Length: 112
Image (cartoon, rainbow, N blue to C red; front, side, top):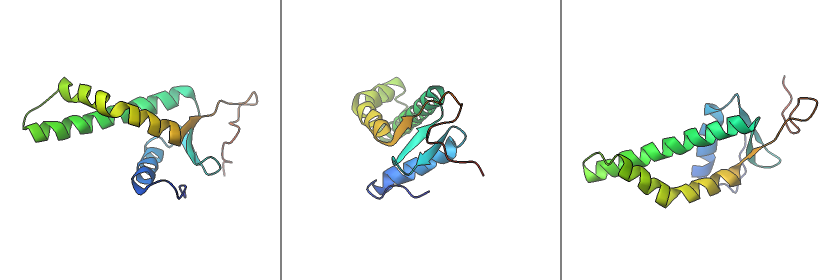
């Protein structure tokens, strides 16, 4: 799966990991250079799971720096400092395409 060349390497690595983690719910569409989800529910589950993962990483790093468990303080800090950038990343690299009346996704790759 070639990712669009104008994505920086960290974004490309992150997207590749997401595609592996949520393989049954999405695919990479080369035409739009985005990860496309099969349903709004699967997109929301993925968004929330990724956000929670980022919050846990932040909590761990900040707690290590402070040499104590910061619990909710670090989670609140992540929301204040990073949630907007996370949402912008998601909007730039993901989309949800609803099924057509025939049941197929408009840009769904052919099985085979």
